[in-house]
Image (cartoon, rainbow, N blue to C red):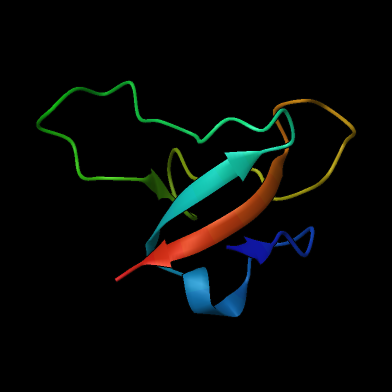
Length: 65
């Protein structure tokens, strides 16, 4: 996984990502089995890339191919 730069990475624009949060947990979608894997990197319902010191900040990410 790649460290979060604190802003939307160029390679993630329009893609979905798998994330590790600052608390060490892997982010999971709560949308159910019919939703696509990972989280939307941007757009409506997209990730917040800024780092605030929260346990729920994205620490690392991986673009899903």
